[in-house]
Length: 239
Length: 103
Image 1 (cartoon, each protein chain N blue to C red):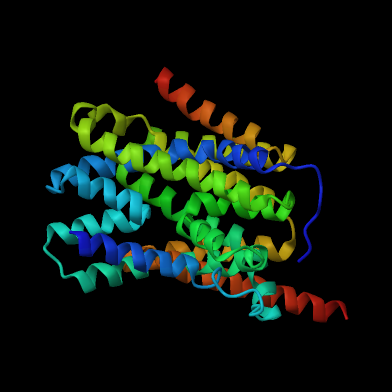
Image 2 (cartoon, rainbow over the protein chains, first blue to last red; image 1 turned 90 degrees about the vertical axis):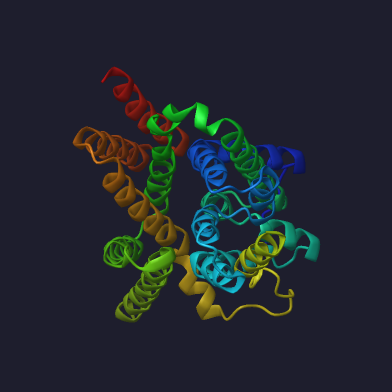
């Protein structure tokens, strides 16, 4: 895939990446804060809480791991559960591969580390609509901003979480679904994409109770497959 | 605890990096890339449906559920009409937090 050259700058894209991630950071903040508070309740040390958010940086998997740690589960079970919880990231990795294949191993490592849901949402839209020669800086800006918010909020939740119980009542958690829903509307323009989105929604509701959020992966794979088949069917029909 | 965090970090990095880390000469099959066209909207839809159903179940009150769906609908309609993501999200959040503050 060719890059569209223009007058973009690395710093400009870095800042833009962070700025575009702001609405999603509002949604990530309470989750990280609650994670910190729960870590304290589960008798994790502050260093362990910080390290988990800093080195793992995987919201849902961290919550699941907390529960398993409190039950005294074995390492292999925690690792396996983390793998299942994060399976959807494989889809992100496949999608981004054509856009990042020219980058150095160091760049790929850093960007891969930060490839969480919110970052993928922002970055996939950027690569689709505004790709330029410094898009990896935009990607990095999004990763760094969310990583800082996630780590700092986790530690804050650990330190003061029990003094601010009203934070759970503010409803900040709606920021993420509202932002993602708007992005889906902007991205979904063709008949086949509407079909893929609709089927995904139904499959997600059916598979919601599968363990460790594996329904997310199942629904996404089915949705992608339906979209691809519908596209192929339509093309053959046009011939 | 160190081994748990290290294990989780490695497994998480593996799922995110598996395809991105492929050397440039190893391109993914064209059909696979084409099939992935819908991946962003499909994954985001799955996350929205999952999160909204969790929130509706956990928060319980009808006012919260109606307010959440109303705000989301407003934001999505604006997004469809204007294609302006920032404006739509700000309007949706303003609606949610504004009405929540009033009631």
